[in-house]
Image (tube, rainbow, N blue to C red; front, side, top):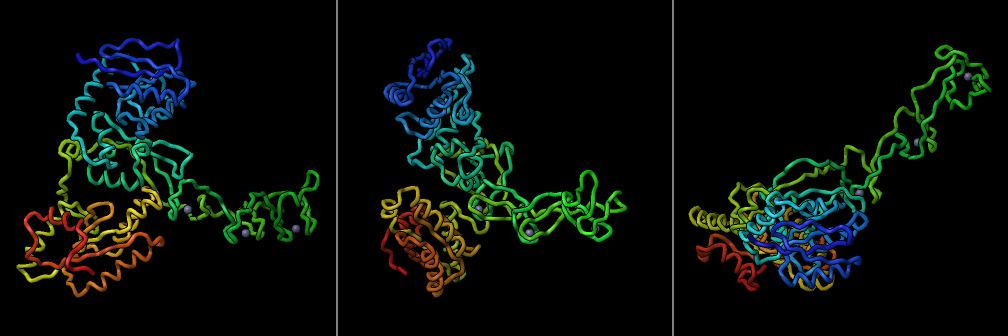
Length: 469
Ligand SMILES: [Zn+2]
Ligand SMILES: [Zn+2]
Ligand SMILES: [Zn+2]
C-alpha cells in the first residue's frame, strides 16, 4: 500500500487530526500566513502528495488565502495538489477537494487522483487550457462552479479560472464548451448586464415618463368633483374633515364629492402626475437602459466534456466537426481545406487567396504595457479581423499574434481593396505599437506540399515571402 505524505497546516494545538490509514502527516503550526507559506515551500522540496488544512473557524480567511496562493501557482508547489480542509470556508468549495474526514474514501480519492495524473499527457505549453486540464482531469468528479461575489465588476466569478490566469472568462468558457471540453451540468443563475460595458452592478430606478427625472414621489392625491382640482391629500386636510383648497367645498363622500385619481406618482421636476414610473437600469459607468435592453448572462456549473479526455491523453484535438459559418477553425481543418481548395482550383481554374497575418511589435508592446494588456490588445484586434472578413472566408489562428485566412474565389487583383480593409483595423488601434503585416499567397499553386500543415506553420513564422503587400 502506497503511503502518501501530507503536509498539515494547523493553528490550534488542541485539535489534533485523527490518523488516516495510508497517509503520513507532517505538522506545521503557524499563525502567520507568510511564514506558513514559506515553510510549505521549504517542505515541498520533499515529496508531499497532499495538503490538509486543519484551521479553526477564526482562521478561515487565512485558509482562503492559502488556497488562492497555491491554486494561482504563487508557491513553488504544483497548483493542482489535492487539498482538504477541516472547516468549510468561503472558497473551499471552489478551490479545495472536500472536507477532511479521516476515511478510506479520502485514500481512494488520492489513489485515483495520482493514477489519472500519471495518464495525463504532460503538455509542453503552459496555456490556460493545459493548466486547467492539469487541475481538472485528475479529479474524477470535477465540477467548475461560479461564485457570487461583490468585489468585482461582474457579479459572478469562477474562482478556479481566476486562479489559473484565465482572462475573459465568458469567452473562454464559450470556446471550451463549443469544443466539448466542458459540458453544462446545471444552470446556477441568470444575471443581467449592461449592453454597453458588461457591468453587472445595476441599479433599477423608476423615473418620470415625461421628463425622465428620478425625483418622483408616490403620493395620495384627491380630485374635487366641484371644481376639478387635483392635489395632494395634505392640501385638502382641514382638521379631521376634507375641504377643497380651491373652491372651499367640503368633501364628505368619496365617489360623490371627490375621488382618488389613479395617478399615484408625482414628479417634483415637471409636476407631472402619472400611474406608473418608467423603469430604467443604470450601471456604474452611468449607462442607462430599459430593462428589456439589458443583456443576459447565464451561469452554469460545468463538468468535463468528451474532448477533455482526448486532449488530456492524446494532446490535441482534431476538430472534425462541421465548420460554423464565419467562425475560426482549427489549423488541422484549415490545412486540409487549403489542400483541397488548391487541388480543386487547379482542376477548375479558380483563384483563391491565402493571407498570412502577423502582428508586429508584440515584444515592444509587452515591454511597454505588460504581457496581460498586450495579449488582450492583440486578442481584441484579432476579434476585429472577423468584422472585415466575409462569412465564406476561412480563418484560423496559429498563435496569439499570427493567423491565416483563406479567401475563396478571390483573385490577386482584389488585394489592394483587401489590404485597405485590413489597414482599417490597424488604424482603429490607437496605440500604434502593434502593426499588422500581411503577406499573400495566391492559389492555385504547384508549391503546396503534401504536408500542408507543416508548410503553413513554417510560412507563418517566416518573415520574407516573395509576395509582400
Ligand atoms: Zn454600462
Ligand atoms: Zn374644488
Ligand atoms: Zn417629470
